[in-house]
Amino acid sequence: MSSDARSSRSSLSSSAPSASSAAVPDALAGLGWDDAWAAEFAPYAEQGLVAGRVVRVDRGQCDVLTEEGLVRADTAFVTPHDPLRVICTGDWAAVEAAGTPRYVKAYLPRRTAFVRSTSSQRSEGQILASNVDHAIIAVSLAVELDLGRLERFLALAWESGAQPLVVLTKADLVPDPVTLAHLVQDVETTAPGVQVLTVSSHTGEGTDVLGAIVADGTSVLLGVSGAGKSTLANALLGADAMEVQATRDVDGKGRHTTTTRNLLVLPGGGVLIDTPGLRGVGLWDAEAGVGQVFSEIEEFAARCRFHDCAHVAEPGCAVLAAVADGLLPERRLESYRKLMRENQRIVAKTDARLRADLRRDWKQKSAEGRANYAAKRGGARF
Ligand SMILES: Nc1nc2c(ncn2[C@@H]2O[C@H](COP(=O)(O)OP(=O)(O)OP(=O)(O)O)[C@@H](O)[C@H]2O)c(=O)[nH]1
Ligand SMILES: [Zn+2]
Image (tube, rainbow, N blue to C red; front, side, top):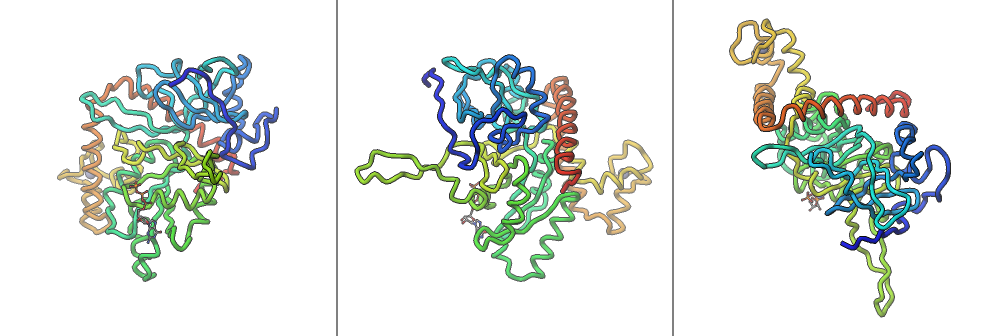
């Protein structure tokens, strides 16, 4: 990799006006910059550093979108030993205004973060993306619903600090409205507190609703292979997803190339992060997330006789009573136990102090971020 700081004009947003001196420059606002970020960035601005959002990170360097366009910068100062503190896609970076190379000197505290467990002996986690507002979980209607798997994705989404949203894809393959309503209902019961949308990238059904949601903030698409994430991303991105590169062909025609960027500005507003790693994320210390997915179980559990009831065979267990009364599907309880066990295995492998440290950080930041976000949206939440 050459060390010269390559910098080029951003072609991500054709409507982005040129640099302005306002507190929230329009070019950055389109990337999710707001007054709270600006306030946190103020000390860096005083040092003459430039703000930008990290689009991708690779081998010691990263691409940062700033007011002046795309900047290639060195990440030596933001690549500590702790893998969770390494700069990642979605971070707001403080970049040197000039130099060869230009260095990222710091990044702003994250509001939310997606972390993947690594398969190494001592699970350390790997940071995948940060500052995500909407975690869109794509679930295909073309195959049988796997509610247990959906619960895993929900746990991961809640744990990140982002607001989950379930998108049932390929709705055109379920023409019977009664069947569709049943499927939606199953998913809604599995995902309390989460909006459930049905979409079809083929007919366009529901994509406008989704577009309106993602127009505000930063989104990621989660879901298993074949769930329809790429198709959905293309529907949201439209033709703007393609970057036309001039070539020296004899016929002089432009050549369409698939962008390798991991962070994309949507034509209707909003930002989409699509990193390869996010596609197959595992669970990592998602106990709080698991609790949120199974909020109704935790509500029943609050009425168990024993405070530390494991809901297995204890007398006065309100959870088992709910199963017996048909208020709680047995499958839900089994799924809950399975996820809790899985999570505990991962947690046992991880450095507890480090985790506690980070969680405190994230929980606080994510609460602040949500408050800002809610304030920005006039208090509304979906
Ligand atoms: N009928 C129908 N098929 C769809 C729809 N959306 C996607 N598909 C098909 O489903 C298949 C998988 O879609 P992808 O978008 O590649 O799925 P993905 O989640 O990105 O998969 P990975 O890239 O492997 O993670 C493709 O053959 C699509 O053509 C839809 O709305 N209706
Ligand atoms: Zn109990």
